[in-house]
Structures are given as structure tokens and as C-alpha cells.
Image (cartoon, rainbow, N blue to C red):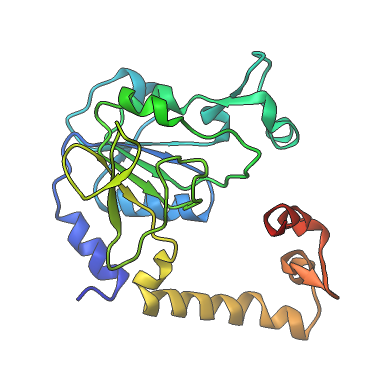
Length: 237
């Protein structure tokens, strides 16, 4: 039984992943964690231009941010602020990348107002795509093949690219991993890291005075959503 992260790193470091191409979205903590795993598995990080235009015999991955996976539908230039304020004016470019992808790992933040990364009708274009690891795990969200979440005991289901329905695992479908409680896979490591974070980054500022982090992390105060988390009204409603 694998209980420690160090053991996982040891196992994946000895595996052979020749010629696999992985596309990874997101630039937050989840994406950084996925990148760390890929590096331990001896994957080389390459640029988007290299990913699309070069062939590799070694395992490679490309990490893209929102700037690379969306564009304005009127050809105006992208900006993060504009995308957040006017998501309806943007469309996804990810289809162009998934055509040359074996495994897609989704670690990006997604809001229901944002465009989906691809449509179900586009799936048949992804001839090489065999696995989607949806770390975001939004049901029918940015990844339309995520029709349900999965469990640590049964992490995968197969998605039929013709019927758009879940099927038993087979070679004809795309394997979908959508475990919504992934940190539970390594409970000891997760608990220790979380505990250390609370002791060093939270408790001192509760005792000696807040430098702003406690206020910024407070979701609800006096029965109302705080300003930074006002967007949660959408999900509640």
C-alpha cells in the first residue's frame, strides 16, 4: 500500500512514458502539483510552439494558462481583466491543441460564465486523446466529458465519443479521472502539510494581529458573504 508521497515519486521515476504528450491547463497550486509529479516522472516541459510543431520520442508536457486557451471572438487582444469582466466575448482555443494530445490534465479555475474548453461534437477530432485527468472536477463544466465525479477506489470511467455516454472502461472510449477528493489519497502527507500551514501561516496572525490574510481568507462574516467571495452567490442560487 502506497501511503507516502516519497514512495509515489520513487515509483513514477522508474516508469517508461516514451512519446507521451500531455497538455496541462492552469497556473495555480493544483497545476504546480501536477507539474511536480510530471517532472518526477521524467517528462520534459516544452513551449506551446514546440508542442504543436515538433515531434518527440521522449515524454513531454506543455502547461498553458488562460491566455493560451481562450481568445476574443472579435480578434481583439486578450487581457486577464477583460476575460474576467467579459467572458461571453471569448471562445476556447484548446481544441487546436487536443488534436495532438495523448493525455489532458485540467487544473485551471473555471467559472460557469467562462467558455467550455471544447464541445462534445469536437471530441472525434482528438484522435490521440486517451485520458482526461479533470482535477477541476466541475460536473458538466469546462470539461463536458465530466458527467460525474469519481472515487479513489474507482477513479476512472470511460466516455463513449459517439454516444456521449458513460460506458465501462474500454479501448474505444476516453478514460475520465474526476476524483473530487484527491488529497485524501495521501491523508498523512496532506494532514501534515495542512497542519504545518495552519501553525505557521494562520495561528500567529489570529493571536498577534491580522496582516490582511485572515480578512482575505474569510468567506462569511456576520451571516453575509465577504466582498472577495461575493461570486459564490451564483453557486448558492
